[in-house]
Length: 479
Image 1 (cartoon, one colour):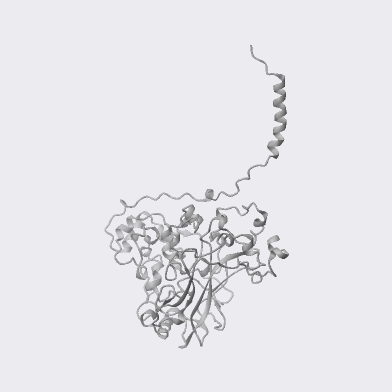
Image 2 (image 1 turned 30 degrees about the vertical axis):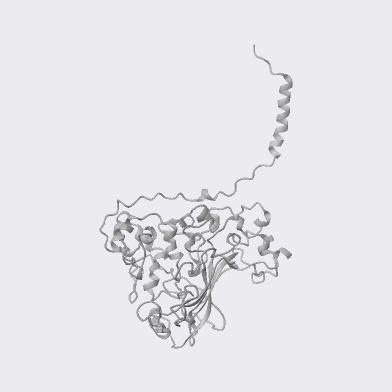
């Protein structure tokens, strides 16, 4: 005979149920997971070892490429359609020129080593190809000159030398057998050492990122992400284009934090109110060149003197420098494009700084954000009669680094660049902006309110277009 459940127990259970329903509804719930960045990452491809696939002998770099193309027949033409190969954009119109122009390392200047034209001996050690020598037009249609190894070889087995060719003594067969998916050191071979050495150009890219700590870069340190995790690649087209050498960039070609992160991920409404006006990088990259120093000033006018030499202060071939480490960025509005990029032959006013590039955006631009930059200042040569910047020939026979003759260096460049030299030169100040997007530090190191909203805060509110600190009167942050 079954035992009957007591009536009092049934009543108790019903009472507890009645109480539990509203408690379950109104009891504080754990916040929903709004940000799961790792879910957005593409799986890292498993690379097949080529140690037993590639057969030798391989006596020339072109033989290496032909061997690669036997199994990867589309790779050459794909790479040749990218700016890693052309070093120059398609023609487009700019407001200050009557005819369409192209912009890129191949034909324009910066305020570091100035220009690649005529300086192929050194500059092309960062080109993804072989045999780009001066004195002849480079044939961009030759697939066998594509350098597969610089992006795919283990760099303990491979390096580039003059004119983009493999360095002397490289074992090409060993390098070809080491190929793999690109690692940080492959990308960094050029992007960490651009401008003549480690950390020179960017301020947020240097060799410390090959094996970074979590405090240096949370993505590459704590998570051990490779560059291609964010700079995703399809058919050798790599997402993310460098602003200093481009004027207008399609947003679809840019890397953004929201590829992986939710835009509205902060629980604090005061922080969320900043998202429309402040870039993620502004708060999460509080300082640049955290470990290795970066060059912030370069004075070419002092070159050629027999002064004590030191990599960080003076070299006879390049002049005087200033390097800085662990310093605050410069902040300005930025919508991802440039409002101006100096082109060879553009006029300069030597009595004031010339901007090699200027970030586009303003307080009135709804697509712009306050963004961190490294500003590199230089004193570089210009034509005192024609009032435009000059590009010298530095490397190679009779270049400035050979005989320290500026006049000859400018005359040698004239037929190569098409910029006429009057015979009279001086030096003028130039500025160049480099966006800061790497070395994202842990959230505990992010800027706090008083870093900006204080009497000695890091933002120049008036320069940004505000009448003062928006906290005091209410501004775009509250819109």
